[in-house]
Image 1 (tube, rainbow, N blue to C red):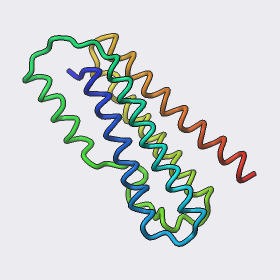
Image 2: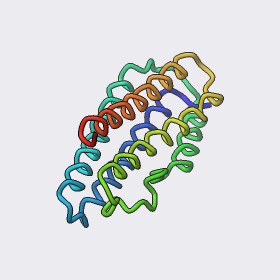
Image 3: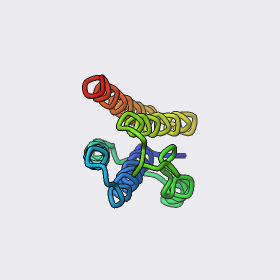
Length: 155
């Protein structure tokens, strides 16, 4: 029902949503170290979106029923919208500490992985599953980078 392109578009939208939350939070931050981390997180979301766009260019174009494709895209867009998972309602302007801020970002990445894992049963072709697994692995890499940041800077 869902194509590789649909899933990758969803990944790109999630990255845009995360970037927007981080950039919006930047507007009211007084602590420069928090502002620096928020900017870095937003910039990382942009880079992740570019990575997914590059991945989309590798998707093989397969003839599909246009109505089914449009319906799948509309369903995904309706599910996601501007969802930002664990970032929703979080006070990123006053996180309490840099470690709390990074932990919120890690939770966002974990939520994203769970969201994508949910789609595995809706994918019918091997290529789409392979692309989904690449997206999940990239999200895991994001978590690893954030965890290493905490270990190096806050230890």
